[in-house]
Length: 318
Image (cartoon, rainbow, N blue to C red; front, side):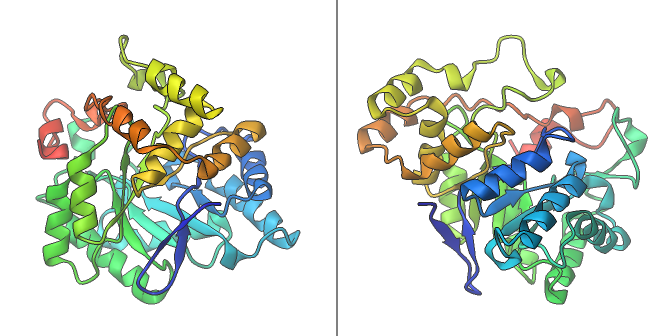
């Protein structure tokens, strides 16, 4: 049984959802339909993933077929970096809503604390980047607050934000961020972030919870550890008659975070959902706690351009 996060207005977000990053066109429709049929009620999307129209088609069909209602689903999406300017925020959300065939989002996140010029694409050059001194997050956030006021999104939050950047929002924003979606798994446990968010009533969603082995080669290191092949995780999985992926997802949920594994394989989609019924022991949790390597698989180096305004140290506030 998937538990939920409860928000101040009574809304409830299932803490296990289907991620759609890297799900190819043609695959993501079937994945979303399979997930909903299996019992998922939370789908995580983003404009930059390039597949929101197909997700929207799947949602629309699921609604019209009577499998679920809109109210039973939790849909998250994210504002891309080239739409941080005040005049671009609302049109970006309207485009996402159009693609998803929805009248509102349950949660809308600022995808990265990085600003690009409108229409800027990879590969990046200094001219395509806009510093946060020129376009501060608070200006973008103010527009996000307006979207929430309008009811176009029921909740607003951020993604890939450091504690320092969250603190700035907490101190200066009219509406406080309700979510931070970050990379979280046993090799990157971010315990201080977990404590900070608990203290400040911000929920955490874990992306790349299985180690994101299928991300583009350009984001990989030659010598990187493969999380799903970790022998400690394998031993715990064998003890419980579970898969390594189920152990990783159960670990995330038992820490009090939401988790959004991506899959387009119907059997794996069902296996991932079954992680909600796996209960790890205190000893299991302690053993996994010792695996922390402070190892990011998505480290943000793609924002660091020679002559540009962003550095890794500034991105993560190291």
